[in-house]
Length: 213
Image 1 (cartoon, rainbow, N blue to C red):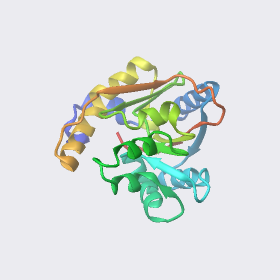
Image 2: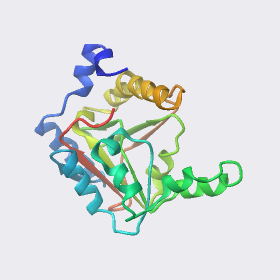
Image 3: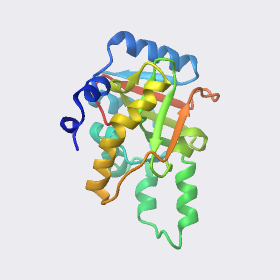
Image 4: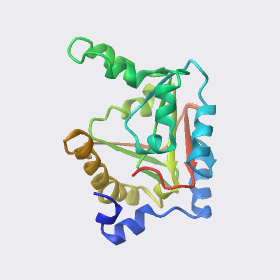
């Protein structure tokens, strides 16, 4: 499934980039809720902004993310040799004999990279997941969280954000999961971050380009 397969009204509602006034409202609300905001004009600038936030040699983890893939951040983390890449390390480990170590490595990395499915103009972040593996690090496990978000994900409020998850992001992610892994996805777990109490822990890079679902 692609954008062309979704109902036109759904695509129009949830795939269109936010105008500058909406982006500024969302950014101001996030900042007021303890979440740092940086802005990038496009995917290439978004990549530069993110990598500038991560010192060489840092322990970095990331989940499967179309936004990270599109910006080239995934490739940089996995191939540059500049970072301790937790995702590649855990994929090479034995699930049966090293399961506990895999779980611990993924739960509390120094840096966790990813995205979200909606950002509200009231300053909340919404992430849905089939397994929930990224939600623990987002919520409290990771030392620092960097989220790369296309501004098409900005919505007025939580109600509209949850609708975006169900009606827009999930069908596209389900199709991706079937193509990539041969399984259906699911909105099994949802994390809503309304405020971050640790200064500087979460950074959101808002990119003025449609990224991910």
